[in-house]
Length: 486
Image 1: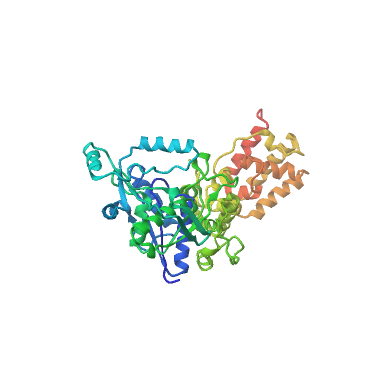
Image 2: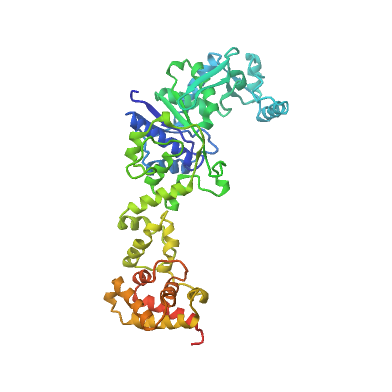
């Protein structure tokens, strides 16, 4: 294969969808593997729904993922005159015709066909209007769209999909379709064919929901006499939720790259995970069967190995992969990613405390945003529940005795020695021995007093992070909660 040219053509009518990101990645990998070119085209001809805000989100997040185009992105609305020129050419050659049917007329016609269990297609009402009829309609301010005239004897439309093999459809089942709307803007498959031809696109790699559009585009290539330069097509499998439902914002799930980015997923993890949605590399990565670097993905990628079946979006797998990449980060780099976006509102902390907290919870983090939940007790004073303070095999009396002895023991430790976890552990252990108590009478209530939780890092690690003064303050408040009358 010699220097293929591929493209990703998102519409700026919403944020960059995870499915579009997967399509972009597969196009990018295909171009990189075959020493080709990867382009971005913004299909913004849907004037009512397209916005600059969504265009920026798409381009920014593609760049964040490392999928920046090899050339400056094109915008279709900047090329509107080109599409109008080819529309006029088709009209002049009688390969297209003006259609004056209103939306309400077309909807009425569609409903009738569905009621008869017929596939909806245009009846051809305006196909044979003569010039006099056309002039009169224009004179009466009737707006006209432009329809492609499908040859009566066209028969089956067949193309060989790289992933799915031979796909076919009867041209008669499609019917004459609109290529230019009545506001003189193109339908995306018309402008897309023109741009693909002019940009010399060799392969169109996109989602399977575009298969039906391919038949329309093949008819357009034929009408424009470009069939010899028609690109090869590859339609990627759909991405479904774990329950096999369609990924949808309405169901409360994440669907855009920005959603995952804001939650605290790393770009390396996202690329690694997205690449496995529908494609299974023939070799394991050097760091495990699910872990692949960008370079490994590029060297292994083969469009012929992409599957036909729907890809399941497994959040547990994404969390596993993201956790791996988080653990690979240095603590300093992780700290820069966490601050300030993934810190709790109103937290008071110094760098030393933050560094210690990161070192303790890093291995349990799946996303950057997990840091708040895993470490909030380091930065927020707990609200005490007497029941949590007492170990299930202990009682209030021994718990109070243990905490009082711990306070006295910890007061004797010098501030400079507080960094030594062994000394902190020894202090707690001596209380257990000297007071003839169990670990549950000492270690459990210290941990609960410092964190306010049943599950947290060890009491020694909590003391080490929180520091001497605040630790003693929290222990004193826990004692008060145990015996409010004291």
